[in-house]
Length: 201
Image (spheres, rainbow, N blue to C red):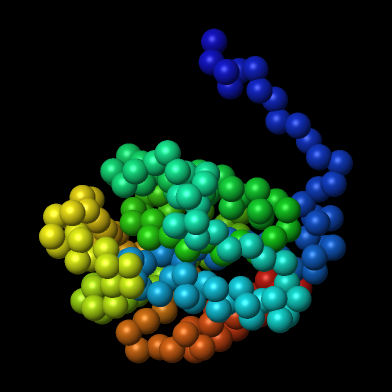
């Protein structure tokens, strides 16, 4: 008998709709995906700052920060990358249930993994944001020196160099980060949220 057979979902007295009304917003996952150095975290931070000005309830999940705690036991093999995103998806789902707008900035290189997270929530609660920055630009930025290490063979399974990145085919929002400022990218995302009714319950 598996442990799961002894586990029963415990219902809450306060439900998602009540939390949503209290926060006066429509909860969702803003899933930023792109290569290392593409600008995911920078744009996600800017978007969260703007949402704060609008008095919206948010939380930002960032790849490195999560790997320092929740996912500190995972490496960067394909199998560990899949588990990394699975865990993040489950955490993001809980934030959505709390009525929060959660921003997730992860390379998340595989289409199937991003689809798995999308399937955890309602169809309109997952907004994929592809920060589309060419590899050569990401590599020229190389803020952490990771591309140099990957080229030298010091880092194995590095996305874009020795491990594949599967670009989204139908992302809700595409940010061309080689030709768009952080301010313009932020404005594009905020306008999307306004137009689609996410910023009021």
